[in-house]
Image (cartoon, rainbow, N blue to C red; front, side):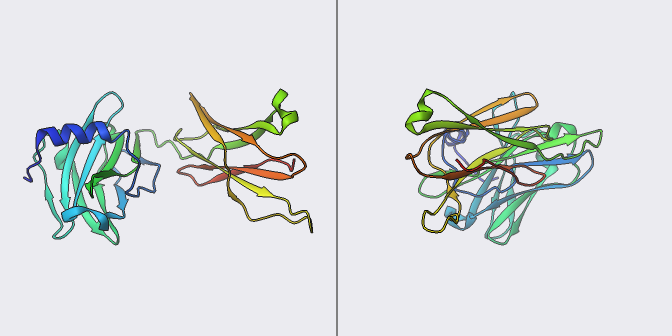
Length: 242
């Protein structure tokens, strides 16, 4: 077993929820039926000091639990951290990263999984949430709609847009906003770019929403697009020009 000081492990667990992700976990969620296989990917591990990658499990009502430590240099796994399911997990090398694997998922594997390693400080992935179903529930893309929200500030060029994602499974989504500006010289549209402005997110049972607060100059024409990332694919909705 690779030795890790208890104080360091405690620090890691608390830091996971507050530090920016520098390792890449592309999958927001993964859905599997009982008995199926699942693999969690972790990219950009080439920056990890000594090639050690740590994998954590986080259940809804529990703290972070270290599953194993993986040595990318020789593909060795170090266990023995008192995780009750440690024998269910294996890790393997992949190009530019590694994967954590469960051969046959069970309902109690439902949790979020995070990779971590040491660079000049501890860095982390954004996490992947695993949904395990016994009934064969299908992945459903969200229905996405964008609404302008008018206010007194609208006359001063201020306003807000509301993007709502609903009727999806699993329920977790990720929002991003893009903007296009209309060119005055020929009426064509610029390439879309990330929209600037404060963003707020709201989540409740069955749906999630993102609010974009914006302030654009008068006498300019823009289109905004809300992109919603989901396990079933990315869904877009666009405002009319205005």
